[in-house]
Image 1 (cartoon, helix red, strand yellow):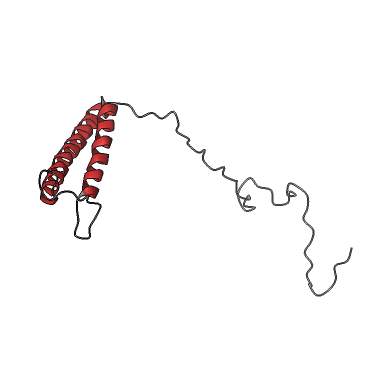
Image 2: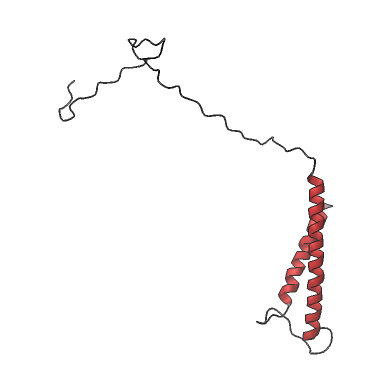
Length: 129
């Protein structure tokens, strides 16, 4: 039902655009000329197109309200689907370097891992091996 009304609204919208474009504007527009008498005369066509525009606009607005009411009634009471929830894991915390003054830490114990090379105290002098 919802899909059918949506298709009908799309058709009414396309007709509404077409009728509006056919109307004669002050700049000439896409209006089609004809004989000066009868239903499709300049004045008769303007009356027909303005009435058609009014009717199609009322139908379009009515269908919009109907679709909004159907969507609100159809969507209430449903549970949100979280099957595609892609929660990112918490970032890994790197432990800080131990404080040598903290109790239980032996400051004389060598640091774990390879020893770093000593820095050259005099950057102007070449490093010796």
